[in-house]
Image (tube, rainbow, N blue to C red):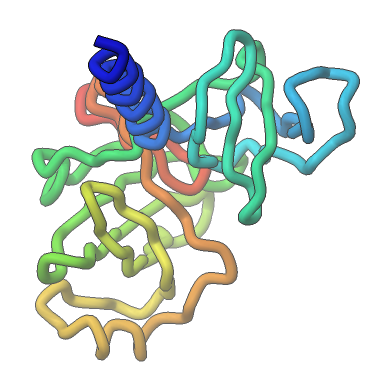
Length: 200
């Protein structure tokens, strides 16, 4: 009996951890302080920028424990929100429009994600710009367990039928990988500080 109770608890804990690790935490508005402990009086561990998506390790009562530069940190739920880390396959091969402007120059954008083999994806992001030609950026991303994380980028045209090794030669490796997040409401994609929704 005791063993079955322990086993049940282990399964519940494992499920909760698994669910937490399938989430990204982002700032609701602007930059937010990260703490070394779940308290507003604890030392600052870093900054959750408005463009960041940090992996959620654990959900506490009023805080999220997140992974930040390879270490654990905490951020208040009152200033953050979450999105899924798993991107449904139904979101591939769709031209999805931005929900709004990215900045004062980039006012209308779109994102297109297409598979490159079974382990990579090509992300094409295009922004219309005020008094300037449209801007297109290409990203090569790693795909693992449904998660998409961009690791290379560039402005030179890239075709998804090109071998991964050749695409890497055409693009530059990112200093910091950029994850892709997903929200079920309006089928929203979160990427590099912008939101794109299938149903705007």
